[in-house]
Length: 211
Image (cartoon, rainbow, N blue to C red; front, side, top):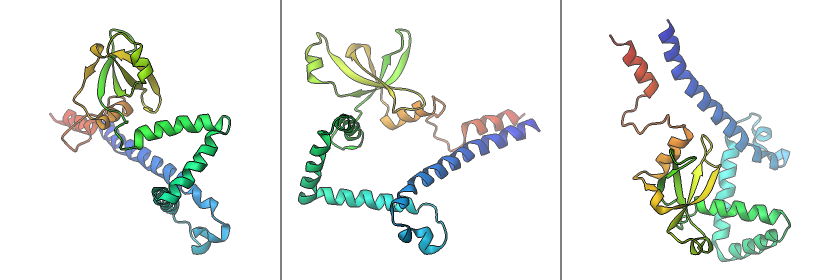
């Protein structure tokens, strides 16, 4: 009786959490519909609420924005608006920092995470996954040895972490993609690079049931 109950939990807990996250995400992305005049909202026009229409609107706005900024007129218009924003106290500082992070993670210019490394953190007897990033030239020029800049993400939220400069000789370069490393960090090491499609916990439970 107990083993069937546990197997059922192993099926429904991840499924339920996934559905909850999807519902929360869709509900959040539907919020842009509130920016439309009430008479233009799909709920008013169709007489029924259709989840996900906000996602379509959001994607359309993002795509049209990219289309506009990619042409000469739109690019100049955006550059002028961005310059004005950067001169606003506090707002400019926040925007500049967020823009640098988004450019690093989303641009295809090669400034994103380059390599996955092992570094000694938080003490000399421990190792942590880290991503090699870009080090300012002023910093590197003032160090007497070869150092690399690394970002050590926290678990389970990899958007937070620590930015360090460590000796290259004290790091171990891994033959691991950034996606695999992030998956390992987010799952707190639970997610494994398995070639099978079975859920590892369910597979273990089924093996335990075998005589």
